[in-house]
Length: 280
Length: 254
Image (cartoon, rainbow over all chains, first blue to last red; front, side, top):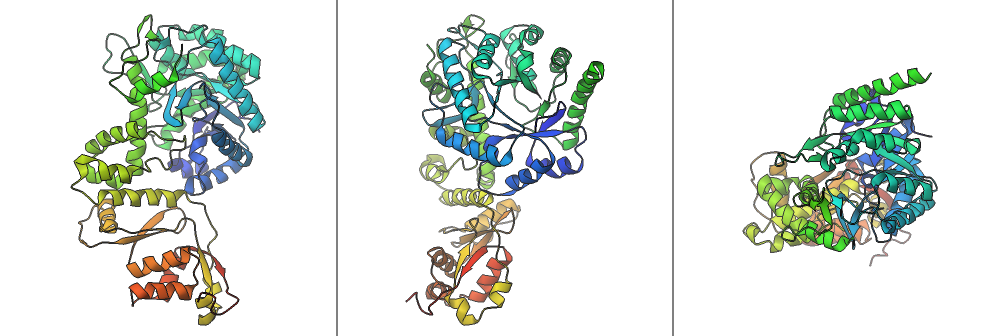
């Protein structure tokens, strides 16, 4: 099974009944792998039912692919167990790190783009793909700062990863916008340079503006708001250039009613369908 | 050179300055680094507030959030699975000076951790009451029962069941003596039930694989009124019994 070139949403337990009874334009669901690694309980039971009805995208947040240290083998085994029974249509993770010396920091931390970090990332992706028996998608991060010791830009880095590991990419359009504002680059130019032919999934989420920074705009990627207009505009450009792609509405904090997620999914569906009609 | 150790130290200690190689448009990153500091502490504090709702209510959200920040910096999680994050909260509360006048808080934290453990415990197929109904009293007494993984009991010197329920249901606290708690999970929602010392002793004996007769005798030694039939019907009605092993000999427990 593959993800359809249609809208999906991040699954939250409280939306279970609505997802089943009134999916609207939502054609697939994404889960955070780490929330489904328990032994039992309601969430797992819900997921076992949903996987019969919807293609599922399994999205990891804790592998620390961008870290220097070797991957946590126990975590990789748990992930393989989940992927084995869930049989997701896709597995994706982040170009970021989150663990250090046995501590999990619960955030997606940035790494400098150098030949050394490229080697680490490629080794880790090879290992994940080997363990899971399928290619994975790697997601571009949101950036708040830069590294003085960077040797290449993000697109060059991601292109090298794709070339060396055969993985695909997950293009988070909100992350592009957040990074572009925070680092003063042109988001549309980033999209035009991005290796779109390797993108297997799109993420659209919300961000907020930091109130304390009035002189220097700082956007924070918080997945707690509707997708902003400039992000829709960039999404439009992605779809115009790449054609329709599986597109996720991400909303992980201050979670709204199901109808609001469906409305966001409908807006994405409109853009995807326009492109499908134009291509037909 | 990228040094994740330096990055993490600055992340968890707001008094340390961010690593020098972090910049924004050629200038030191300064408060941009604070975004990561906030994400880590705010994100994990929220996990604690969700995992310890009664503790947060007892202490007030503002105090709890400040305390959670200290906890997170002292005990960052060891695993990306945050389901059981906060395991050291009882010990933390025992030694956290500002809460020393509330000696029952560590037990409240233990109860909330146990409820989470029960919530995520393996699902199991409950045994029907028909199996017991078809057995003679003698056969029942010599059998051993197996409890569902979601069954957990807790002992406390404080009225923690009352404290918990009063806060969950917004009612007044009435009881003041010590209480034990038995957590049962009918399907997915753990229920904390008030438990007496006889019942506690009974469940403890069952978990040590004693027969029903031996467990009943142990329970009656501390609580002469202990009623086996009542206990079995409580366990059966909450889907807490998942297996029954008949004994071959009549008195193999001595």
